[in-house]
Amino acid sequence: MGKKQWQGLTDDEKKRYSRQIILDNFGQSGQEKLKNAVVFVAGAGGLASSALPYLAASGIGTIRVCDYDAVELSNLNRQVVHSDRNIGINKARSAKKRLRQVNPTIIIKTFECKIDETTVRRIVGNSNIIVDCTDNLSTRLVLNAYAVQKKIPFVFGSVWGLKGYLSFFHVPETPCLECVFQKAPHEGEFPVLGTTPGVIGTFEALEVIKYFTGIGMNCKNKMLIFDGALLLWKTVHIARNPECPICSKLR
Ligand SMILES: [Zn+2]
Image 1 (cartoon, rainbow, N blue to C red):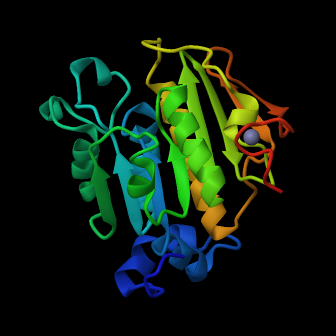
Image 2 (cartoon, rainbow, N blue to C red):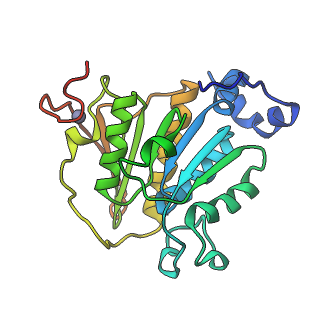
Image 3 (cartoon, protein in one colour):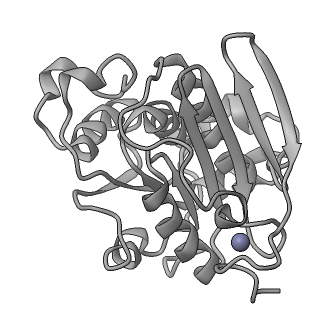
């Protein structure tokens, strides 16, 4: 993974992560895989507010995070990685301040620009996985196309109100995002309760940790749908679209 030399664990790291190292099939080798991983988190809003602290706390060695916007008062009902005193500050930078406190031993790189076809390559860089914590389909489709092209796994998370959605895309083993969504069901300002991205962002971090360590199974070929109002979970099967403009030519 990456061009850097493989990094082993320090004594402090063995202690910091001791409660997860003792998980079945995790061990010090699992922890080393997290330490040597580079994770790109797209967006530093609601989904990232839970995904980022859990990724940082778990010992992901390098986190790259990008957001163009500044923290606003109306973000704070759900974007708990930010605080009142960071209103007006770029969200990626604000999140980094918090993550420094969560885990000062990891590398955090911030990018303060829009994610589009012209910037995606530079921002994603040498990341081994892309975590979608954005809030709009057009950015997601840019990330999806790049992930398919580079064969990087793409963790999809989305929320609306009290409903949340999650899937793990990695063509050709799974469909891509564009096989499932071509048009946004909702755009612009939408209702959201903070606990919904809290749940889904946490699950996105879990998908990342499972991917690197090999514990459990990723959410492949299915969409997890969470209904917070009724406290119901369901999964629906999703399949590749043989006419998908993004992934249909890949085997
Ligand atoms: Zn596709």
